[in-house]
Structures are given as C-alpha cells and as structure tokens.
Image 1 (tube, rainbow, N blue to C red):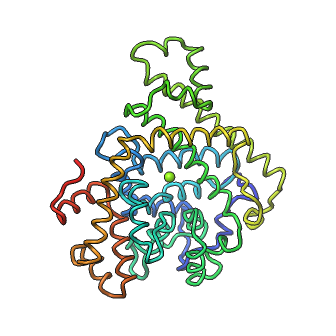
Image 2: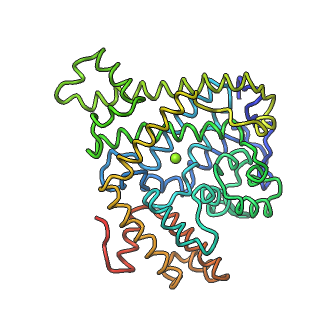
Image 3: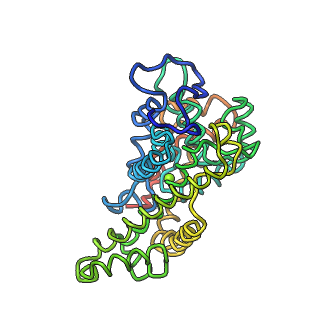
Length: 387
Ligand code: MG
C-alpha cells in the first residue's frame, strides 16, 4: 500500500470482516480477499460460462473468466495512476461476475422470470451471495468472509427491496448505501467503468472474429472509426488482404488506451473539483470515476451499436431462445423434484417453505457452467437443445 491518496481505501481503515480474523503476516486484507476469490470454486467455473458467445462455439472468444481478467488489468492500470487501491480493484474485478448464470444475459433473464414470485433474481446480488454464503471453505461459517470494501464493490446494483432485506440482516452493511443514495468507494466505482470499457472493446473483437460483425459496419461508430482511420493512414498495408486481424487490433488498442487516459483525466478533474478527504466523503459525493462528457457520449454510441448489431443478431438470438428454455425447464424440474439436484442442494431445498426451495434451485442453476446446464437438461428432459 504505497503512495495511496487519502481518498483511497486503506486496509488499515477497513470496516473489516463479518467474522474477525487475525491479520496475515505478509498480505494486506484486500490482497487476502483477492487470493480467496482466485481459489474459490465459483471463480474456476467462470472459464466455462458464456460472456456473449457460447462457451463451446469457439475456443478464442471471451469467457466470463477472461473478461474478468481484462477488467482487472484495466482497473489496476487506472488505479495506480489515480493512487487508489490496486489490490482492492483487483479483488472486486475478479469477483464482479461470480454470480452470473450460464448463458450470459439470456440465462439471467430466464432465471429472473422464474424467480418473480420469490423476489426475482439479480446477478449482482448473487455475486455477493456466492462470496457471503454459497462458498463452503471454513469450518465455522459460510462464504469467504471478505472485507466490507470488497463486498461493497461486488454489490454494484441492488433493488430497494433487497437493500432493505440486506440492511435487516446486516445493519449499516452493504445495503445501506442504496437506501441513502450514496456511492461506493472510488475502487468500486472504477471497477464498474473498467467492466464497461472491457466488454465494449472485446465484444467488437469477438464480434468481428466470429463473422457476425464486419469492419465496414464499424465505420458508423465514431469511437472505433477514428482509430481505424489513424491506423490505416499510418500503415496503409492494414487495408490489404489477410490484414483484417491486425487492422482490428491496431484500432482497438488505441481505442482502449484513449478510454483509459480519458478516465484518468476526467476523474482527476472531478477529484480536484470535489476534493474528497477520505473514503467516507467519497461515499457522500456524486460518482467521481467517470468519462469526459464526449467520451461518455461516444461510449454510449458504441454500446447502442453493439446492442443493435451483435446482441440482437439473429444467430445470437437463436442461442438466447434455447438458453432461456434450458433454464426455465431446469427450474421447473428441480422445484418439482429437488432430489434431482446435487445432494447438498437437494437437502437444503427440503428444509423450508416454497421460497427456500425456489432460492435453493436458483442458487444451483446460477452456479452451473453452460455445458453442465446443457447436459443436465438433456438428462432430465431427454432433449438436447444445444450442440
Ligand atoms: Mg462484467
């Protein structure tokens, strides 16, 4: 923890862990959180979970794991420049998608529909549930017993209803800020923006390599077109045969850098304007880790393009339909026959009322990798919906 600004999260001022622990001899509390996340079961499963492209559609596309590593890389670079806590940024980044269902957003939407009568399903809340309850590592308690600051960062969004429930379980805990309209630490704010920068860039890359997007289509996206024009002006050979991949990288690389430097500059400016003195004052201010207004607009434009042209592409939509059916079918089957789940979940589902049963089924499904969900669906329904 060298060169930390006063408004950074200092491990010595941490709000601590739910179950107090003796400090580690060589690692700070946030380094320890990061290590626990890397060694968790949920973290290993990220490699077999879809980001946008199905895990088995190709070996070169991003998965939730490589996405999380890219978020951590971008976040750490920016954190160092802003003198905020790089270890905490790394811990939050690596954990931010732990609660994601199989099949990306399609899986999450389907599970949310199934869970509507029982309070719904939110993936950010589920990520917190993974580190707080579902990981089984310690003899005396559930979860990984992470610090408040890491947990605060993992719970990026939360409905008011769930915030109230969390506040009831843990007064002045991670739900509090949603009830009082406050911000999380700068480290947590940074992870949200690094997430966005990472997927905007890698979805272009995966989109073009999959053939669902063309480089020509990207002419309509100013943020990309600017850097592609600069790259091809400087290196005209990029327009030649067999150069598409290099052209793509020669455009995405400066696009990423420009966003990183923009965040550093705009955030420094916001810090100079609001002058936070410590983490508590950060929590009471507006979001300070930000893009400049121009970059914000261009980033939104890129997002809208990806939504229209990639996330709504007929080939992606076909996958989406099958994925939703798998999740819905599995939910109905397990609620009806909990014994079909792994023994620990089957046991838990039979210990309470309908809500306990539904939540346990949702935990089991959310934890699945894409291929496990496909196999389970085939085993239980006799129908194979995906290759
Ligand atoms: Mg993410």
